[in-house]
Image (spheres, protein in one colour):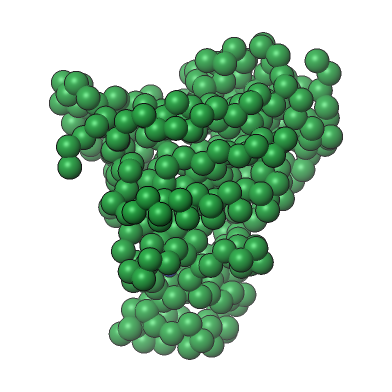
Length: 372
Ligand SMILES: Nc1ncnc2c1ncn2[C@@H]1O[C@H](COP(=O)(O)OP(=O)(O)O)[C@@H](O)[C@H]1O
Ligand SMILES: [Mg+2]
């Protein structure tokens, strides 16, 4: 089938078509495995030969994301391209989109990349967030902080993840300490940030929604997420909230996917307030760690859902058929693997990373039908 370069129309791709993946981490790896399972060929572009996705892809293009040589190879090989990370240069996606369909498209990535754009977009479509204020320069910080009040969270607009790039400004934090927190985050460079009210939430949850080019949508059961040291520790489905909260979270996810005209999948992180209201936190236009339970407990997992959407296939059922708790295996948790292997209701997924550095996501396990 001829490539519909630049048109971004997503006609069904036949078996043997090539799915291009930008990024070689564990998400790219699980995307490639899902694509392989559906009969597609995979081409991964990532900078290191030892990247987790490289060993499961048919083609590994070992280049930086802004290197035109690698991008040209990816565009030539691929019938459609998707990505596993948000910190991609806009030029990279723009260049690719002129040559091959890319899902989700650049406009969506640009919204998700930047907390100012993200929160502005969410507000513009009537999805509530914490009260926030953009801070373009250090000189604006104290004014923004007095508007939002303390406690507040200072977050870099671009590039933060796993709690990196943010600082809690407590009730007792002085102006001088707040300015020092800015300097620490900026690390000598120009920085745009946001200040948002610190919410006293009851639970953190996330909902994953898939949407195809023809406008069909599916939503997974929202997961209840617990973080440890700012890194996701566990995701549990169903969560300890009412089915009505779960339905409302799905409805917000649908609204977002619709407004973005998404082709692919998106994860929306939400806070549940004690009042029962939901506040959106951030979005990721890709499979998400909090959706790894879908590999073992849903009819169609989040990676396959993305591949289906990007390749113009019908979306699969997101129905969950068993209760599940996903537990991340971080750094030294690798020592627990022999024990996990002995538990009958545990599904183990390792990402093939050799070096178990502290804080590094090495794999995850899913406990099926765990007793509470
Ligand atoms: N406004 C807020 N109020 C309270 N806690 C917050 C707020 N924003 C973020 N957090 C906490 O910090 C964590 C990381 O923040 P988040 O915005 O999701 O950034 P990232 O996941 O990119 O590091 C959240 O999961 C939540 O636990
Ligand atoms: Mg987050």
